[in-house]
Length: 81
Image 1: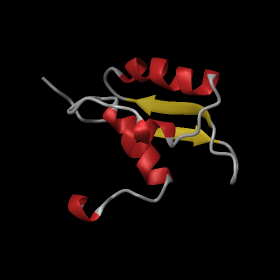
Image 2: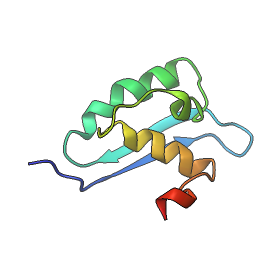
Image 3: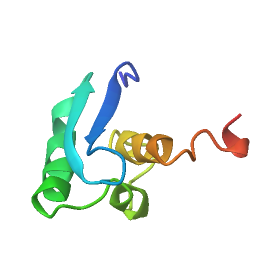
Image 4: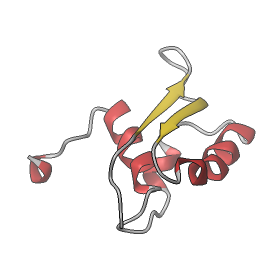
């Protein structure tokens, strides 16, 4: 059974520093997000890189894309409301 319970929180630098410093994730299979986030951290990528990355739909990794959109002030969009 597919579960949608849980959350993802991206931890980024202070204002003006958009690097991903960490992630907090809770829920079934949340550990599967670690690889994608660790690559971003290792390469000092900004959270906006997650918005440009391809994420399968429906998938848990989409939550990283949505969290980045929230940080950028782009979520929810008009089509989401």
